[in-house]
Length: 367
Image (tube, rainbow, N blue to C red; front, side, top):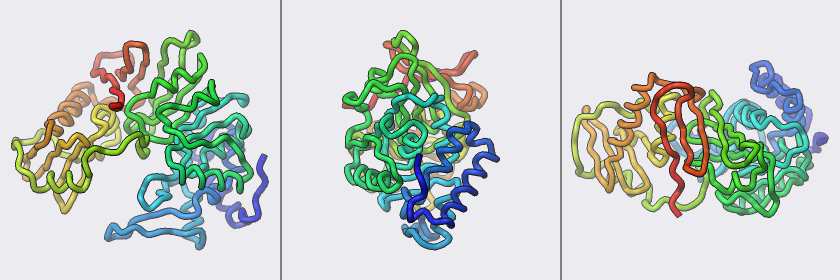
Protein backbone atom coordinates (compact mmCIF):
# COMPACT_ATOMS: atom_id res chain seq x y z
CA UNK A 1 0.00 0.00 0.00
CA UNK A 2 2.58 2.57 1.06
CA UNK A 3 5.62 3.64 -0.92
CA UNK A 4 8.78 5.03 0.71
CA UNK A 5 8.43 8.74 1.34
CA UNK A 6 11.10 11.27 0.45
CA UNK A 7 12.35 11.22 4.05
CA UNK A 8 12.47 7.44 4.07
CA UNK A 9 15.91 7.28 2.46
CA UNK A 10 17.88 4.23 1.45
CA UNK A 11 19.81 4.26 4.73
CA UNK A 12 16.65 4.02 6.81
CA UNK A 13 15.36 1.37 4.39
CA UNK A 14 18.41 -0.76 5.08
CA UNK A 15 17.91 -0.46 8.84
CA UNK A 16 14.22 -1.33 8.47
CA UNK A 17 14.98 -4.38 6.38
CA UNK A 18 17.57 -5.55 8.90
CA UNK A 19 15.11 -5.10 11.80
CA UNK A 20 12.30 -7.02 10.12
CA UNK A 21 14.64 -9.78 8.93
CA UNK A 22 15.84 -10.18 12.51
CA UNK A 23 12.29 -10.34 13.86
CA UNK A 24 11.43 -13.02 11.29
CA UNK A 25 14.59 -15.03 12.00
CA UNK A 26 13.82 -14.95 15.74
CA UNK A 27 10.30 -16.23 15.10
CA UNK A 28 8.60 -13.01 16.20
CA UNK A 29 6.69 -12.45 12.93
CA UNK A 30 5.47 -15.76 11.54
CA UNK A 31 2.54 -14.46 9.46
CA UNK A 32 3.73 -13.39 5.96
CA UNK A 33 1.02 -10.70 5.83
CA UNK A 34 2.37 -9.08 8.99
CA UNK A 35 5.92 -9.48 7.68
CA UNK A 36 4.89 -7.43 4.66
CA UNK A 37 3.20 -4.81 6.85
CA UNK A 38 6.28 -4.34 9.04
CA UNK A 39 8.48 -4.01 5.96
CA UNK A 40 6.13 -1.38 4.49
CA UNK A 41 5.81 0.95 7.49
CA UNK A 42 8.84 3.17 8.32
CA UNK A 43 9.11 3.29 12.11
CA UNK A 44 11.42 6.32 12.05
CA UNK A 45 8.60 8.57 10.81
CA UNK A 46 6.76 7.87 14.08
CA UNK A 47 9.74 8.25 16.41
CA UNK A 48 11.48 11.51 15.39
CA UNK A 49 12.86 11.68 18.92
CA UNK A 50 13.16 9.48 21.97
CA UNK A 51 14.42 9.99 25.50
CA UNK A 52 16.88 8.04 27.61
CA UNK A 53 18.53 8.60 30.97
CA UNK A 54 22.23 9.21 31.46
CA UNK A 55 24.21 7.64 34.30
CA UNK A 56 22.99 10.35 36.69
CA UNK A 57 19.36 9.73 35.76
CA UNK A 58 18.94 12.94 33.77
CA UNK A 59 16.83 12.81 30.61
CA UNK A 60 18.66 13.03 27.27
CA UNK A 61 16.84 13.52 23.99
CA UNK A 62 17.94 11.71 20.84
CA UNK A 63 16.77 13.64 17.77
CA UNK A 64 16.24 12.49 14.18
CA UNK A 65 19.87 12.46 13.14
CA UNK A 66 22.95 10.38 13.65
CA UNK A 67 23.68 6.69 13.81
CA UNK A 68 22.55 6.27 17.42
CA UNK A 69 19.04 7.55 16.66
CA UNK A 70 18.44 5.51 13.50
CA UNK A 71 20.02 2.40 15.01
CA UNK A 72 17.81 2.61 18.11
CA UNK A 73 14.64 3.29 16.12
CA UNK A 74 15.22 0.13 14.08
CA UNK A 75 16.18 -2.04 17.04
CA UNK A 76 13.81 -4.34 18.88
CA UNK A 77 13.60 -2.06 21.92
CA UNK A 78 11.04 0.03 23.77
CA UNK A 79 11.54 3.78 23.26
CA UNK A 80 10.16 6.56 25.48
CA UNK A 81 8.93 9.27 23.13
CA UNK A 82 7.95 12.10 25.49
CA UNK A 83 10.12 13.68 28.17
CA UNK A 84 7.36 13.31 30.76
CA UNK A 85 7.13 9.58 29.96
CA UNK A 86 3.45 9.70 28.99
CA UNK A 87 4.01 8.00 25.62
CA UNK A 88 6.33 5.41 24.14
CA UNK A 89 6.90 3.13 21.18
CA UNK A 90 6.65 -0.54 22.12
CA UNK A 91 9.38 -3.02 21.15
CA UNK A 92 8.49 -4.27 17.63
CA UNK A 93 8.64 -7.96 18.64
CA UNK A 94 5.94 -7.42 21.28
CA UNK A 95 3.86 -5.37 18.86
CA UNK A 96 4.10 -8.20 16.34
CA UNK A 97 3.03 -10.80 18.92
CA UNK A 98 -0.01 -8.76 19.88
CA UNK A 99 -1.03 -7.98 16.31
CA UNK A 100 -0.72 -11.62 15.26
CA UNK A 101 -2.80 -12.65 18.27
CA UNK A 102 -5.74 -10.77 16.70
CA UNK A 103 -5.82 -13.54 14.05
CA UNK A 104 -6.99 -11.12 11.39
CA UNK A 105 -8.23 -12.38 8.03
CA UNK A 106 -8.16 -9.00 6.32
CA UNK A 107 -11.64 -7.51 6.37
CA UNK A 108 -12.06 -6.86 10.11
CA UNK A 109 -12.82 -3.53 11.75
CA UNK A 110 -10.38 -2.87 14.60
CA UNK A 111 -10.45 -0.45 17.51
CA UNK A 112 -7.06 0.54 18.94
CA UNK A 113 -6.95 1.95 22.46
CA UNK A 114 -3.91 4.20 22.90
CA UNK A 115 -2.81 5.87 19.66
CA UNK A 116 0.56 6.94 21.06
CA UNK A 117 3.02 7.60 18.23
CA UNK A 118 0.66 6.22 15.58
CA UNK A 119 3.04 3.42 14.50
CA UNK A 120 0.72 0.60 15.54
CA UNK A 121 -2.22 2.29 13.80
CA UNK A 122 -0.07 2.49 10.65
CA UNK A 123 0.69 -1.23 10.81
CA UNK A 124 -3.01 -2.00 11.19
CA UNK A 125 -3.82 0.36 8.31
CA UNK A 126 -1.25 -1.34 6.10
CA UNK A 127 -2.70 -4.75 6.92
CA UNK A 128 -6.43 -3.94 6.78
CA UNK A 129 -6.76 -0.59 5.00
CA UNK A 130 -7.16 2.74 6.86
CA UNK A 131 -10.96 2.67 6.63
CA UNK A 132 -11.02 -0.40 8.88
CA UNK A 133 -8.98 1.16 11.69
CA UNK A 134 -10.23 3.35 14.55
CA UNK A 135 -7.70 4.61 17.08
CA UNK A 136 -8.33 6.69 20.22
CA UNK A 137 -6.15 8.39 22.81
CA UNK A 138 -7.03 10.64 25.72
CA UNK A 139 -4.16 13.05 24.98
CA UNK A 140 -5.02 15.70 22.33
CA UNK A 141 -1.36 16.54 21.70
CA UNK A 142 -0.47 12.91 21.03
CA UNK A 143 -3.47 12.52 18.72
CA UNK A 144 -2.48 15.62 16.72
CA UNK A 145 1.11 14.39 16.36
CA UNK A 146 0.00 10.90 15.40
CA UNK A 147 -2.35 12.23 12.72
CA UNK A 148 0.47 14.24 11.18
CA UNK A 149 2.88 11.33 11.19
CA UNK A 150 0.32 8.92 9.81
CA UNK A 151 -0.45 11.28 6.96
CA UNK A 152 3.25 11.69 6.14
CA UNK A 153 3.52 7.90 6.05
CA UNK A 154 0.52 7.71 3.72
CA UNK A 155 -2.21 6.51 6.11
CA UNK A 156 -5.46 8.12 7.22
CA UNK A 157 -7.21 5.90 9.76
CA UNK A 158 -9.88 7.44 11.97
CA UNK A 159 -8.05 8.88 15.00
CA UNK A 160 -9.99 10.58 17.80
CA UNK A 161 -9.47 12.11 21.22
CA UNK A 162 -11.42 9.95 23.67
CA UNK A 163 -11.13 8.19 27.01
CA UNK A 164 -10.20 4.66 26.01
CA UNK A 165 -12.07 3.12 28.94
CA UNK A 166 -15.27 3.96 27.05
CA UNK A 167 -14.10 2.49 23.75
CA UNK A 168 -15.54 4.40 20.78
CA UNK A 169 -19.17 3.39 20.20
CA UNK A 170 -19.84 5.83 17.36
CA UNK A 171 -17.61 3.88 14.96
CA UNK A 172 -18.48 0.36 16.16
CA UNK A 173 -19.19 -2.46 16.30
CA UNK A 174 -15.72 -3.96 16.00
CA UNK A 175 -14.32 -7.36 15.15
CA UNK A 176 -11.26 -6.78 17.33
CA UNK A 177 -9.96 -4.45 20.03
CA UNK A 178 -6.27 -4.01 20.75
CA UNK A 179 -4.88 -1.90 23.59
CA UNK A 180 -1.37 -0.45 23.83
CA UNK A 181 -1.67 0.55 27.49
CA UNK A 182 -1.74 -1.43 30.73
CA UNK A 183 -5.11 -2.25 32.26
CA UNK A 184 -6.32 -3.55 35.61
CA UNK A 185 -9.47 -5.06 34.07
CA UNK A 186 -11.22 -5.24 30.69
CA UNK A 187 -13.61 -2.28 30.37
CA UNK A 188 -17.19 -3.52 29.83
CA UNK A 189 -17.65 -1.00 27.01
CA UNK A 190 -15.13 -2.91 24.89
CA UNK A 191 -17.11 -6.11 25.18
CA UNK A 192 -20.35 -4.28 24.39
CA UNK A 193 -18.83 -2.79 21.22
CA UNK A 194 -17.27 -6.10 20.14
CA UNK A 195 -19.13 -8.38 17.75
CA UNK A 196 -19.80 -12.00 18.81
CA UNK A 197 -16.66 -14.14 18.32
CA UNK A 198 -14.58 -10.95 18.29
CA UNK A 199 -11.11 -10.75 19.84
CA UNK A 200 -9.58 -8.49 22.49
CA UNK A 201 -5.79 -8.26 22.92
CA UNK A 202 -4.84 -6.13 25.89
CA UNK A 203 -2.07 -5.81 28.50
CA UNK A 204 -3.20 -6.87 31.97
CA UNK A 205 -0.66 -6.41 34.72
CA UNK A 206 2.68 -7.54 33.32
CA UNK A 207 1.13 -9.80 30.67
CA UNK A 208 -1.00 -9.64 27.54
CA UNK A 209 -4.46 -11.23 27.60
CA UNK A 210 -5.99 -12.65 24.43
CA UNK A 211 -9.76 -12.99 24.79
CA UNK A 212 -12.44 -14.18 22.41
CA UNK A 213 -16.07 -13.22 22.89
CA UNK A 214 -18.49 -16.14 22.70
CA UNK A 215 -20.70 -16.62 19.65
CA UNK A 216 -23.70 -15.86 21.85
CA UNK A 217 -22.02 -12.70 23.17
CA UNK A 218 -22.69 -13.40 26.84
CA UNK A 219 -19.09 -14.07 27.95
CA UNK A 220 -15.45 -13.94 26.89
CA UNK A 221 -12.56 -16.22 27.71
CA UNK A 222 -8.91 -16.55 26.88
CA UNK A 223 -5.30 -16.82 27.97
CA UNK A 224 -2.09 -14.85 28.28
CA UNK A 225 0.80 -14.60 25.84
CA UNK A 226 3.95 -16.19 27.29
CA UNK A 227 6.19 -13.11 27.09
CA UNK A 228 6.44 -10.40 29.74
CA UNK A 229 4.87 -7.07 28.80
CA UNK A 230 5.31 -3.75 30.58
CA UNK A 231 3.13 -0.92 29.28
CA UNK A 232 2.26 2.54 30.52
CA UNK A 233 -1.15 2.48 32.26
CA UNK A 234 -4.39 3.55 30.67
CA UNK A 235 -4.75 7.18 31.69
CA UNK A 236 -8.19 7.57 33.19
CA UNK A 237 -7.82 9.81 36.22
CA UNK A 238 -5.01 11.37 38.23
CA UNK A 239 -3.49 9.70 41.26
CA UNK A 240 -5.08 11.11 44.43
CA UNK A 241 -1.79 11.46 46.27
CA UNK A 242 1.27 13.28 44.91
CA UNK A 243 3.92 10.64 44.23
CA UNK A 244 6.85 12.75 45.40
CA UNK A 245 5.21 13.56 48.71
CA UNK A 246 4.30 9.93 49.30
CA UNK A 247 7.85 8.78 48.60
CA UNK A 248 9.18 11.22 51.20
CA UNK A 249 6.65 9.93 53.74
CA UNK A 250 7.73 6.37 52.98
CA UNK A 251 11.39 7.27 53.44
CA UNK A 252 10.92 9.08 56.74
CA UNK A 253 7.56 8.10 58.23
CA UNK A 254 6.97 6.23 61.45
CA UNK A 255 4.73 3.22 61.16
CA UNK A 256 4.16 -0.38 62.18
CA UNK A 257 7.33 -2.50 62.13
CA UNK A 258 7.77 -6.21 61.61
CA UNK A 259 10.24 -8.62 59.97
CA UNK A 260 9.44 -9.06 56.30
CA UNK A 261 9.01 -12.43 54.56
CA UNK A 262 10.02 -11.25 51.09
CA UNK A 263 11.88 -8.19 49.84
CA UNK A 264 11.36 -6.18 46.66
CA UNK A 265 13.70 -8.42 44.64
CA UNK A 266 10.61 -10.51 43.78
CA UNK A 267 9.66 -7.76 41.32
CA UNK A 268 12.72 -8.66 39.25
CA UNK A 269 11.29 -12.13 38.55
CA UNK A 270 9.14 -11.76 35.41
CA UNK A 271 6.78 -14.60 36.29
CA UNK A 272 6.39 -13.51 39.91
CA UNK A 273 5.75 -9.97 38.80
CA UNK A 274 2.89 -11.08 36.55
CA UNK A 275 0.85 -12.20 39.56
CA UNK A 276 2.02 -9.26 41.72
CA UNK A 277 1.03 -6.65 39.14
CA UNK A 278 -2.27 -8.37 38.50
CA UNK A 279 -3.31 -8.65 42.14
CA UNK A 280 -1.76 -5.37 43.34
CA UNK A 281 -1.94 -3.18 40.23
CA UNK A 282 -1.50 0.18 41.92
CA UNK A 283 1.62 -0.73 43.91
CA UNK A 284 4.93 0.87 42.91
CA UNK A 285 8.17 -0.57 44.28
CA UNK A 286 11.38 1.42 43.84
CA UNK A 287 14.78 2.14 45.31
CA UNK A 288 15.34 5.69 46.54
CA UNK A 289 18.73 6.67 47.97
CA UNK A 290 19.52 2.99 48.44
CA UNK A 291 16.28 2.28 50.36
CA UNK A 292 13.51 -0.02 49.10
CA UNK A 293 10.27 1.98 49.08
CA UNK A 294 6.75 0.83 48.19
CA UNK A 295 3.79 3.18 47.64
CA UNK A 296 0.14 2.96 46.60
CA UNK A 297 -2.08 5.82 45.37
CA UNK A 298 -4.44 5.47 48.34
CA UNK A 299 -1.61 6.84 50.51
CA UNK A 300 -0.32 3.51 51.83
CA UNK A 301 3.44 3.14 52.01
CA UNK A 302 6.19 0.79 53.16
CA UNK A 303 9.95 0.98 53.72
CA UNK A 304 12.15 -2.14 53.74
CA UNK A 305 15.55 -2.08 55.43
CA UNK A 306 17.63 -4.20 57.83
CA UNK A 307 15.24 -7.18 57.48
CA UNK A 308 12.31 -5.04 58.71
CA UNK A 309 9.36 -3.48 56.94
CA UNK A 310 7.83 -0.26 58.25
CA UNK A 311 4.30 0.42 56.96
CA UNK A 312 1.88 3.30 57.23
CA UNK A 313 -1.12 4.95 55.62
CA UNK A 314 -4.68 3.66 55.25
CA UNK A 315 -3.63 0.09 54.39
CA UNK A 316 -0.82 -2.39 55.05
CA UNK A 317 0.50 -2.42 51.51
CA UNK A 318 3.39 -4.83 52.10
CA UNK A 319 1.06 -7.30 53.84
CA UNK A 320 -1.02 -7.35 50.65
CA UNK A 321 2.02 -7.83 48.40
CA UNK A 322 3.49 -10.60 50.53
CA UNK A 323 0.16 -12.43 50.68
CA UNK A 324 -0.12 -12.40 46.87
CA UNK A 325 3.46 -13.60 46.44
CA UNK A 326 2.89 -16.35 49.00
CA UNK A 327 -0.15 -17.57 47.01
CA UNK A 328 1.94 -17.67 43.83
CA UNK A 329 4.73 -19.64 45.50
CA UNK A 330 2.24 -22.10 46.99
CA UNK A 331 0.79 -22.67 43.50
CA UNK A 332 4.22 -23.81 42.29
CA UNK A 333 5.51 -20.62 40.63
CA UNK A 334 3.22 -20.84 37.57
CA UNK A 335 4.10 -18.92 34.42
CA UNK A 336 1.74 -16.35 32.93
CA UNK A 337 0.96 -18.75 30.08
CA UNK A 338 -0.65 -21.13 32.62
CA UNK A 339 -3.30 -18.59 33.62
CA UNK A 340 -6.71 -18.11 32.04
CA UNK A 341 -9.17 -15.21 32.08
CA UNK A 342 -12.95 -15.53 31.98
CA UNK A 343 -15.45 -12.68 31.82
CA UNK A 344 -19.12 -13.23 32.64
CA UNK A 345 -21.92 -11.19 34.16
CA UNK A 346 -20.61 -12.31 37.56
CA UNK A 347 -17.18 -10.74 37.08
CA UNK A 348 -13.72 -11.09 35.58
CA UNK A 349 -11.63 -13.94 36.98
CA UNK A 350 -8.00 -14.95 36.45
CA UNK A 351 -7.22 -18.54 37.41
CA UNK A 352 -4.84 -21.42 36.70
CA UNK A 353 -5.77 -23.71 33.83
CA UNK A 354 -6.61 -27.29 34.68
CA UNK A 355 -5.62 -27.32 38.33
CA UNK A 356 -6.26 -25.74 41.68
CA UNK A 357 -4.64 -22.50 42.64
CA UNK A 358 -5.39 -18.91 43.52
CA UNK A 359 -8.17 -17.13 41.65
CA UNK A 360 -8.21 -13.37 41.41
CA UNK A 361 -11.24 -11.26 40.58
CA UNK A 362 -10.24 -8.16 38.65
CA UNK A 363 -11.59 -4.99 40.20
CA UNK A 364 -12.76 -1.98 38.18
CA UNK A 365 -11.29 1.47 38.59
CA UNK A 366 -13.26 3.75 40.91
CA UNK A 367 -15.65 6.19 39.26
